[in-house]
Image (cartoon, rainbow, N blue to C red; front, side, top):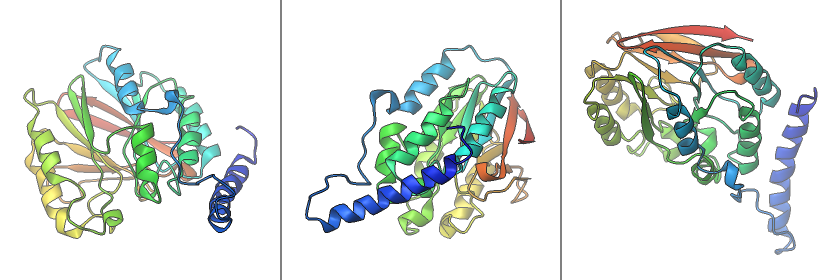
Length: 276
């Protein structure tokens, strides 16, 4: 996978898969392959639960360092270079993939990216992106990773992963699930750092406009929320967007060869932009 033509070959393969699906539809069942089929090996299933178990197997320090990256899509060579760069970082507990694992929502794309990410020295966790919902992508994501909304605690932190891809649900008012998010924020009796991770930030056009204010206000009203993490816009961003005390931190896409190293401690954090 280190060959210089990896991206070209895999892009060709993706289009070949799509064409194969079209051929199968036009040949009255002669070909049985469906490009949207969801077939994974046992070691490719339920990765969220498995990786959380790996994270919990190591006692946390008072200060936790982790990596935020995202938008791998078809940038396979760049993703491999990311793994090499990430593995050179010190004292990293895990990697957060901020979504758009795939480009077309095909199971083979998820497999390719997982194969690359498996080269990390650390566990990795994901949140679903808008491209991951295309076609049968949600089913592939659920099979490989698990729930679209979930949370876990590590040290002084509670990490909350939520689906914010409103456009893919026709802005029907259900995504993001604010009732679920509210319950997760409230269920924090030790007042740990509440860190919300999603793909689409609330100020993006793919986020439901009717839910932007309730969502951002919910984060601002919680004193345990100092920052939240996103991908999607293919650029770095680190600003107090709503001037309400919450910092919105975005990592760039793999195609631009960058990621963020986050350092957190009780009540504080630091974000370091890395280019490789």
